Length: 81
Image 1 (spheres, rainbow, N blue to C red):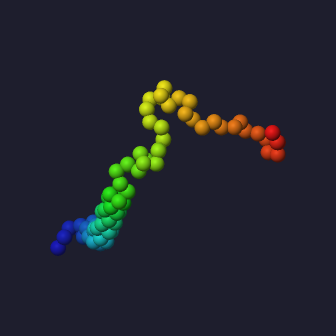
Image 2 (cartoon, rainbow, N blue to C red):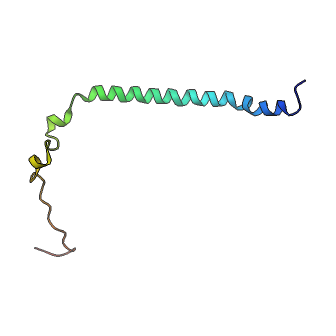
Image 3 (tube, rainbow, N blue to C red):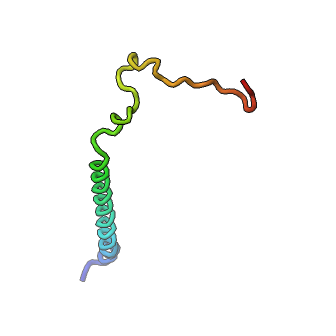
């Protein structure tokens, strides 16, 4: 016969260990499936699509200085030029 209080200390861990393990299996399987899906999407995307479309300017800040698109200053609503 186990010492008094010993069975109660093992009851809850034994009760929850099965569902906890099942939950971990589900979560890690879902994570692995998402990682596989991301890898497939990365392969289908190609090497560097930004280079084909022009992408943002590259180089040092001094080389790209002045290549920004001019922005008009804010005007109050309803004001005309």
